[in-house]
Length: 110
Image 1 (cartoon, rainbow, N blue to C red):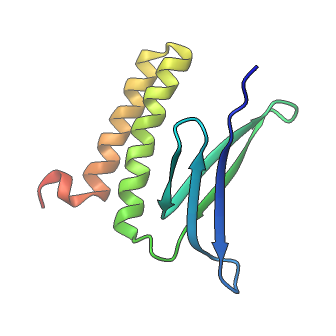
Image 2: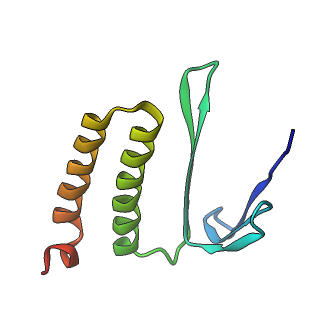
């Protein structure tokens, strides 16, 4: 059996607010810095999702809106691949379009 490690290093300020987030991934020798991380883990014993939501002080509100929009669309794709529920995935994508229309003015051409 092969193991693979993904590492996330978070540098905090004196108030425990993330200042810098770096990541590395063994398999593809990837690494970099990022302004935000949303990590979800399934706890099968509690049948609940554990979350780690982090963003740095430099993450702008506009970047956060775009980040969430892209996550909504990605979740729809992942949901469809994992469950085969194409109709619900389409509904999620419709919500993504609604979100973009109301939260991302550059997408609607304003």
